[in-house]
Image 1: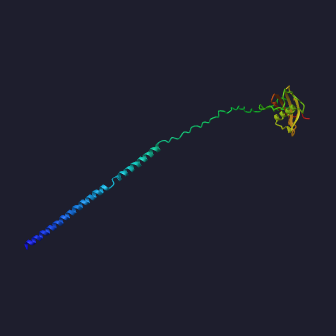
Image 2 (image 1 turned 180 degrees about the vertical axis):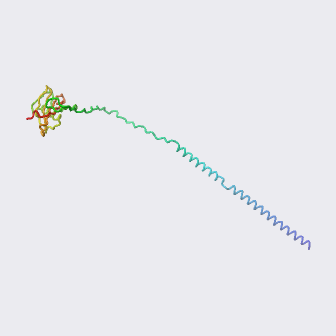
Image 3 (image 1 turned 90 degrees about the horizontal axis):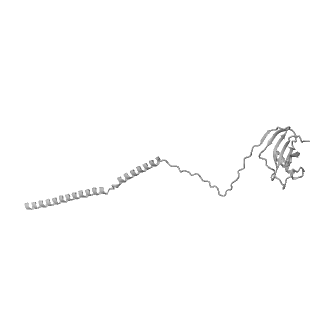
Length: 216
């Protein structure tokens, strides 16, 4: 009986030891698994994340510094080159016309003369005559008609409204005429004209008379 009891106790101890050993092995295995999991999980974490954050911050700071430097730099405005105007090579040179001279009006110094008027810009009235000029006092001649044109030109009185009171010679190539507007025969002018070859009769001087000394 005693031997059977001892054998049973030994068998129970062996079972107990096996269970303990198994439990210890399981615990150790769990510890190993947990430790491995912890270390493996720590290694699986991405360590690059903080570095990327630092890089982003560094890039942002760099961009801000670049913008500040760009803002501080003086901006150079583009300089415009003056436009060059090219004159055509074949452009003909035009002669500049002299400026018109002023009309000279002075107080008359002769009897019955109110004013003396001289216009340096007067020109010849033109002519249809050819050959050597000979002054004519025939009222139907071209020369007489051109004399009338010169008298109207000098006084500014239209031919259709001008009364010719008198035309006489004043040397071989000169003449004197007295005219007035038909609307006012008391407004009389004495006009000095001269012949210019190729240009016709040209006014020299106009005298405004105090009264018409040739009127009827």
